[in-house]
Length: 292
Length: 135
Image (cartoon, rainbow over all chains, first blue to last red; front, side):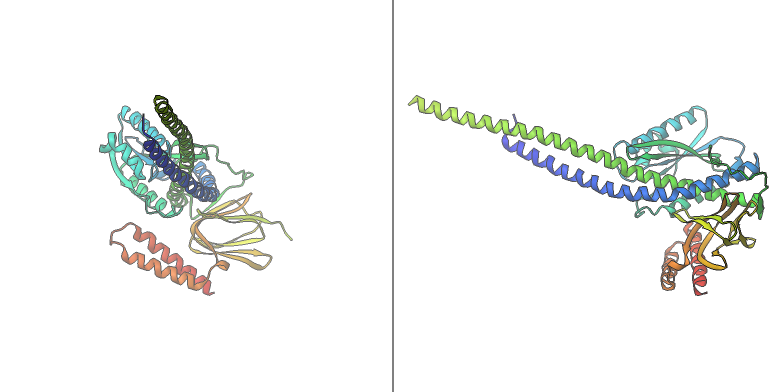
């Protein structure tokens, strides 16, 4: 039976934990709002870009630059795992890593060579336990302030296109957390290279007219594809960051509620113990008086 | 008045403009071109320069874009710009300060840093922007 003093300390400690989780929840809620706005603002560009690419790719047929047509083989796979820099966000990072593990295992089982590029510290930490020998690089996101991901998206995109041109891999797949809404983030695997025109992208009815391309299709595709890849990375970064905040908010809300329940239970226990002690003291006094 | 052209200009950060206009003049890599309503389908890359939106014969808006694409379809004109700024919203001394800051950043980098190219591109964009502002 813990003493009254122990219980009191315990309650105080849970209370301060609750204050921290509550504060984290509020911070995450504020950041979520901003991240969501940024993700929404970036959507029109990504959508138009996809439509334009779908248009061009359709007219290019199966050919086109290497970035679109592929290298013709699929020996070396690059798996890009995008997670958060920080934890305490419920299962957010774990879900992405779980999907990445499945993907890596499936590729290895097919006898492919797998390379892993991690974006965000948490994914690297978790994957380093069993796939450290596959790591080919890491991108640190911790220095990014706000939702200013444009520069890193371009950096990552250039790194990927360069690596691809140099023949370091044949296929690149991005694994990230898609932001559906505040309570649901879906870990998603998306093929980055060779670029795929999104399915179900709205095709534009030209009414039988023929497109004019300037300078020409080839040059346009070459200029468009790297940008398309950058755009995909940027939207993934934005969605991932919105998802991280949403997930943290939910997790911290739960933690705050758990702390509240715990405090209630502990208070009850404390009051009972106090009552028992008073009763005990009274009995001692009464029986002392009776003995006289 | 003749038919209107649906014009939208988007950058990765946001949608800068979307609406009906009379005439848009954009800087294509192979030369400036103007788009009116019912233009034939056409796609081109853009260079750094000013996109002018005209209402009748008067220039209503000037937007400085960095590279990107213009796509003309029966649905209208879409410009996808890497970066875009409305010339009415910015001041020359702000741009000067930004050029200076980017230069300093460039100096601080290592010789073989991959960011170097990106920053140089950014300076070129800002200088073009500055020149466009002076006009």
